[in-house]
Image (cartoon, rainbow, N blue to C red; front, top):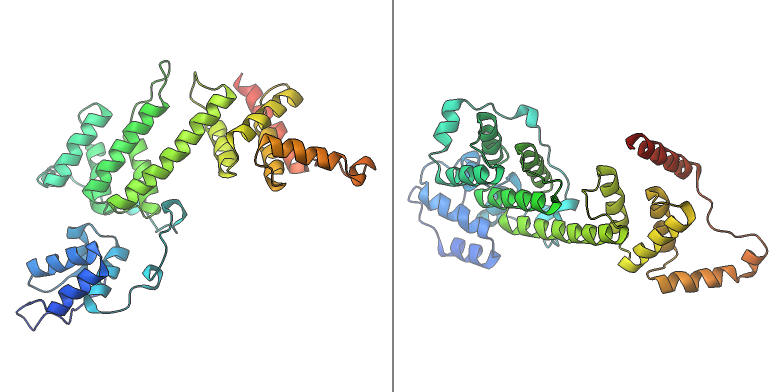
Length: 327
């Protein structure tokens, strides 16, 4: 990162001006306040990369904090911008294949950092065994290479543990592996979850989605097993349409009556058609379909239930073949 200077430091005395303090207070930026304290502690030459590492800032955080302290305009995307849901943020390039390879000595030395030592203990508790070297390396990669703050990683570990517990059943307990932890860490980093506040918002959004998934599974009678990845994908697609639970129940009932069993592509298409027509409740479906079928065009045979596309038919056939192979 390029070198940066701050006009409020008076020559080499590093006396902070009253204006600088006022600018930080008026900005309401905790990152700027932390950077100011860092500068007061480090009275030598300022090195942005060192500051970013010490403060566990992302490049975007450091850039915004520097702008506030320098009296410059904030980066364009941070000016008067409404908070963007983490899942909709543009991905930063994360090249895990380029991550550093830590030696045993480096990992042992990392445990002298109280924050990392705490994370090490939490990770051991969650996975249920003493961490192997590759697991310690994975944890330190999150802390050192991905630059996720310790409190964010702690929230991540707890979230992964709770998600595993939520997906467990008496017959199929789900344990936590470091593969799960690493995958979640990359998702958080790619989605810009780099602070405790963002992590809490992200977790809340995930929990709302998980709660909705659980309700849909109960409607479909899937409670004694973990849904397959394909089933989860269809459920997530239907939840994204934001239908009422009653409308999902009606789509399920319609699918079973017409097809004899739950055919996921068919049920999803039913919901898509209903949502596209503005139906939000079973009453909307009843009233809308009654009006449609009483129209002159329908009676004249010019309008019938939407004809499935060739792509839809292929998807149904593919789904049925896959389902038959699993039996």
